[in-house]
Amino acid sequence: MLSILAMTLPAAGAVEAGTDPAVSSATSFSGGIGLNFGQAPGDGLSLGLGGSHRVHRFTFGFEAQFLPPGAMFISNKEVGQYVDLTRYKIRDHGLGGTGARGLGVMGLVPVCFQDRGLGACAVVAAGAVSVDSSWQPLVSAGGRLVGEYPAQSPVRVRASVQVLAGILRPSGFAWSASPVQLTANLGVVVDAG
Image (cartoon, rainbow, N blue to C red; front, side, top):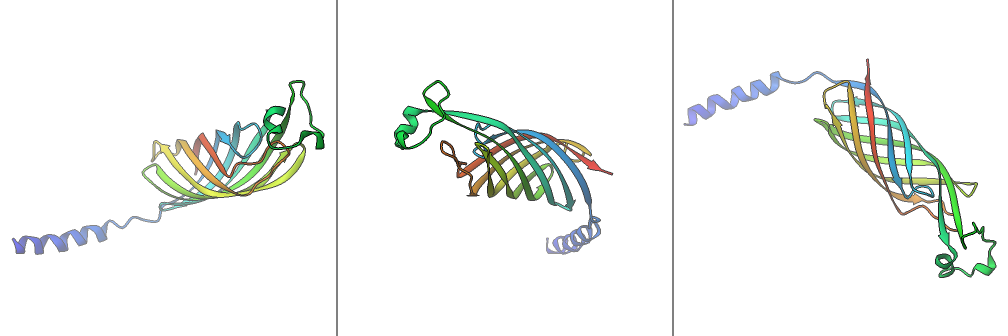
């Protein structure tokens, strides 16, 4: 039994050493649409474009995200619980309440580890959000889970879920960015060359 084990161990070591893969790298471009909660008033769709470079299983990228104009309405009854409304000029929309409107532009830098189409990323996001026509900075950091199918294809479908913690959050009279921001995306990834 020991002689069989002694013969198998060196053989297994030789096989592993002989299969050392060449450095694999690729540049990819991506685009997608997502549902965004907590980064801009009205919580709605987000549109994104990005580029990334992969070496082995690690990916570094840059993405631009556009948060289209959104709006939300809060009744005076809800606001009145927390604020003396007689001290403020409240924009009444004919329904006895106030609203917040906004849109945003974000830059995201994800650093990911991916294997067989599944991945986990650390993400830093920075940008600006317009809350009632006043542009304010938004900085967040967190993580992302990614799935791509088919994993080895030069054109893949990507689904991801991202959770960010707001570090610098914009706010208005009736709205402020959430301390926890969630985005669920669906898109396409295309390898260049």
